[in-house]
Length: 303
Image 1 (cartoon, rainbow, N blue to C red):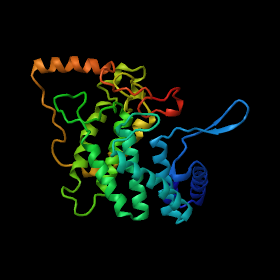
Image 2 (spheres, rainbow, N blue to C red):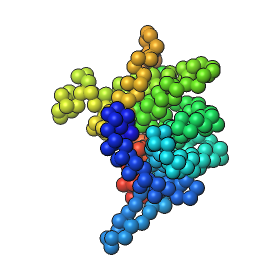
Image 3 (cartoon, rainbow, N blue to C red):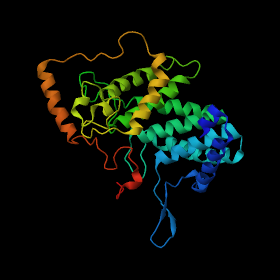
Image 4 (cartoon, rainbow, N blue to C red):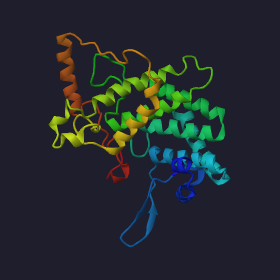
C-alpha cells in the first residue's frame, strides 16, 4: 500500500496502510515482542498466540519503519524502535543465525532480521543499527554453501532448499548491495557474488521448454519457479521473490561468464549422485517439519 501510494499519489492507499499499521500496533507487546496471530475459538472468544515468529516480527518492523518514513507519525517510530531494540539485543546475545518458536536457526529467519533492521536504520538514520545489519549479513554469507562440484547445493544455504527461500535471500542481499555503505572495502561485491550464485540456483528451478514438457500444462508452467526438486508445483511467492531480485540486479551484473560449474571426474560425479539421492530423502535435515517458510501457523506442533 505504501508503494502504491508513492506510485499513484492516491491517498486511499496510504489510508489503508495506516489502518493496517494501527492494527499491527495492537499485536505488539511490551518490549517490542510481536504476537504472530489471533485465534477465534468455537465459543467466539479471541486469544493471542504465545509463539513468536521472526518472519512476522520482521514484517511488522519493516511495515512500521517504512510507514514512519512516509507519515512522520511518532507512534510508528516508537513502536518500530521497541521491536528493533528487541531484535538488536537478541543479535548481541546469540549472533545473527537465528531461529524462533517455529523453527531452528535458519537463513530465512535470519534474513528477516537483517532486512527489517535495515528498514529501521534507513527510516531513522541509525548508524549503529546500520552497522549491525551489515555485520549480520556478512555472518549470513559465511553460511552460504560454496562447492562448485556439487550442483545440487552450490549457492544455497543449509535448511533453504526451496525457490521461495533462495529467492527471498537473493532479494534481501540485493537490497543491501544497492545500498552499500560508502567506504566499504570491496564495494559490497561479496553480496553481488552471493546473489549471482542464487540466480544460478533460481534459474535451475524455473520451468522452461527444456523441462516443462514433464508438467500437465507446459505452456502454463513456463516461467514459473517450482518449489523444490521433490515438490514441483509453482508458488507465487517463489516467482515474486525471484522477479524482485532479478529487477534489482539485472542491470548491475558483471560482464562475462557469471557462474562456471566445471564437470568433475566420473567417479566423483557418481559419488555426488549418491549423496544427492540421500539429500533428496531429507537425509541431512534439509526439510524443516514446519516447511521452510510456509505459513507456520498451519503447523500442528512446534519443534
